[in-house]
Image 1 (cartoon, rainbow, N blue to C red):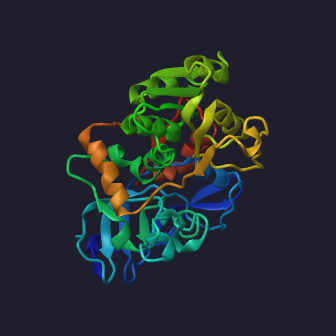
Image 2: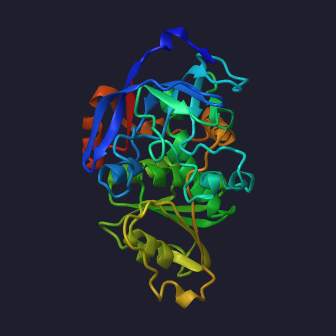
Image 3: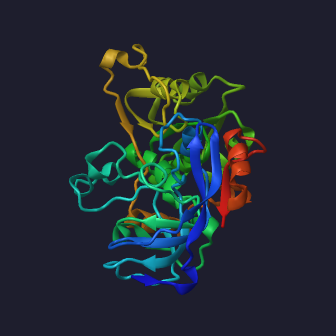
Length: 359
């Protein structure tokens, strides 16, 4: 094993899930990488909406688990068999960490690694995550990607999850050049879906939200028209804009019955609904909007694509300047203050979009 001697610490600080409503900083042993694994020292991470589901007890994880799945850091140690990397390199690791060898991965379904639903989502779900000083990365050869020179942590902070997820929603929706697209909800993932729709060649992009600052940011990322649902009925306006035809693709980026149903009602017959939200309750299909199953609709879900090649491609987009997402970082905290960051983010105060957590 190769290890940076100055990183040879025995314990570290980590944000640990204790019970519904409670996450706290605790001391944990610094992991030691085994064969095929790597240890990275976290420099910057963030909080995701899924972490809030965990905090609230809406998505179950084991008490004592370190939370977080959006790591940016520096290689501190490399296990046997991990080649092509050097200690001290700055790296990004995707929220999804596929093995690259199982049937699901070889079938192109890396997010479902191991043949289990969401099996590729390990960090902060089935193994310790990255809201800590150090992170143990499994299958390092499949998941470590070096950050290009000249890019800051905050410029690549969206790559592990929300950029990959949002872009994935545009890709799964099979947006074609000239398509009309609506994105319901302009939180971080919805904003990334808006940017992804622009890159995919949509000619009319409609962004729906109720927060004016988010709608303004949507415009900077590619939205042609924004709709404030607190002032205007989105479906009436969408049908007016499309001459009653409906949109080619609707992207759901919140995870509620209301936004899912609105997406379905906004579609043309034969349209595509790309669902990105994490649903915490029963989801139903309205019979009329679903045309009793006869409307040739396509409904597809997407779990954040991961792996090092995905990270390479996303960072290439950032480096090219075709999309700039670092403006989403609206607040910054130290790891010691992560409970305050959770309180802010969970309650959506002070115009928060994303928080940067540094160690």
